[in-house]
Length: 424
Ligand SMILES: *[C@@H]1O[C@H](CO)[C@@H](O)[C@H](O)[C@H]1NC(C)=O
Ligand SMILES: *[C@@H]1O[C@H](CO)[C@@H](O)[C@H](O)[C@H]1NC(C)=O
Ligand SMILES: *[C@@H]1O[C@H](CO)[C@@H](O)[C@H](O)[C@H]1NC(C)=O
Ligand SMILES: *[C@@H]1O[C@H](CO)[C@@H](O)[C@H](O)[C@H]1NC(C)=O
Ligand SMILES: *[C@@H]1O[C@H](CO)[C@@H](O)[C@H](O)[C@H]1NC(C)=O
Ligand SMILES: *[C@@H]1O[C@H](CO)[C@@H](O)[C@H](O)[C@H]1NC(C)=O
Ligand SMILES: *[C@@H]1O[C@H](CO)[C@@H](O)[C@H](O)[C@H]1NC(C)=O
Ligand SMILES: *[C@@H]1O[C@H](CO)[C@@H](O)[C@H](O)[C@H]1NC(C)=O
Ligand SMILES: *[C@@H]1O[C@H](CO)[C@@H](O)[C@H](O)[C@H]1NC(C)=O
Image (cartoon, rainbow, N blue to C red; front, top):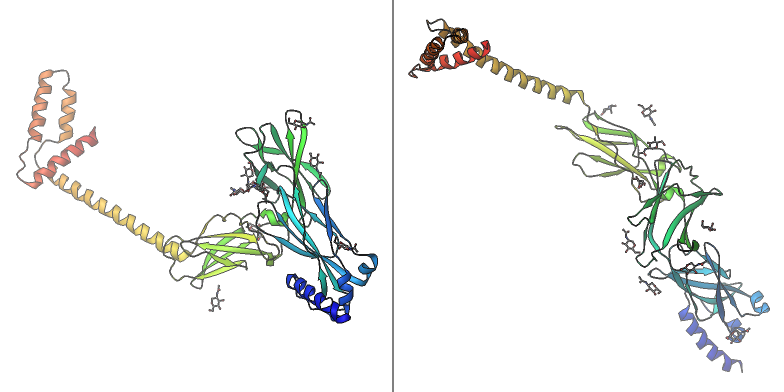
């Protein structure tokens, strides 16, 4: 008699076993009992302000519940996403935070275990449930904490959002509610962000955002969206401070200190990147970096940036620090020396040319040729008489009309002009 019943039961159980999520093995002793169990779940949700609670039951009797271990497999996926979340739970409910999702598909099944061995002896089929949330009018919500006490959040308003709505922003942190200090608006005067400053953040406590839609026609409250962050995960650090660069033992040494932070300031939390002119960016965990660089020929700059990595996952890098330039006395000396030499050479060269001209000039002037300055003075003095002026012009014409037969006279010509200008 027992044989007859065992065979179909084993068949059914092996069928179930194949569908089981987690590896199981069957125990033959419990087979009669298992066959008598029918499993079924009923799902429902309860809505709360910032979350929905998905609940379910099973239809096991009290004795069965006491005799076996009962667990549930929950699988759910938000609308318009591909990631499916799967969990094995002992309780009969799950709090689901919708954030900006417009709903989810969920399914639950029951697994019955032998208490002593924790082997699955039976599981139910899936029971499915779909929850459609009120419309979500915003997307791409992103928040950032920067410069210790500044807080920015931005979002986009979806195209399908009604025209007559406005978006309001508030948040709760350490048991207190905060309204937005200054809204960032788009061209249509809709709030698309919030800027806040002088905010104190406690790194271990969550920031609970509440973004509420209002219907402007009758000023009634529309849907609210909720999202929570740990401050450290959205913090953009300031650049590292006291960055310095020096040449030591024929290598470049860059030093810095970590910036202040709302979270843990432990040295091991920070990850740095160092950028030295034209070199590959390197990751560093210490507060110093040495680059063996034998000939810092030209101007060499170093910059450092930082983010939290080890203590908490954070994707936001700080800005790069202001560049610091190599400050090496030798380099500076060589540069200065060559510059001085160069200037000196130009100066001397110029002096030489001028002296040469002047010398030849003087040589020429000693010759019995009228001095041009005298000429011009005469010309100016003889302004009353037209005749005298003409004479002077003729004279100067004569002076300028020296034949260009030899170079010396050419030089004389130029020098005359120059000294004439000087006198004027
Ligand atoms: C549980 O539900 C299943 C399916 O409706 C049914 O076959 C089974 O008898 C029920 N079990 C109990 C203990 O009510
Ligand atoms: C998102 O999912 C819902 C429900 O599955 C669907 O009605 C809607 O068209 C989807 N939206 C987009 C943009 O894919
Ligand atoms: C905004 O979100 C949509 C999906 O909701 C995405 O396709 C788009 O790339 C996002 N835009 C930005 C600027 O992040
Ligand atoms: C950063 O914060 C300090 C002190 O709160 C303030 O003086 C400074 O102006 C801020 N810097 C920027 C860039 O906002
Ligand atoms: C934060 O918002 C203010 C106001 O729009 C803007 O000036 C500032 O650049 C923003 N800061 C960051 C880090 O996004
Ligand atoms: C969210 O903000 C709205 C509007 O200010 C408010 O009515 C609602 O109670 C808030 N929700 C929570 C959970 O505090
Ligand atoms: C406000 O107006 C909207 C759109 O006209 C309507 O759907 C909503 O029911 C109204 N609410 C109240 C409280 O009158
Ligand atoms: C940074 O440099 C300033 C001035 O040189 C100094 O007062 C300060 O203590 C330094 N900070 C750190 C963390 O070393
Ligand atoms: C330079 O190197 C020598 C040994 O190679 C070491 O003793 C000295 O401390 C180093 N100096 C600096 C400033 O790093």
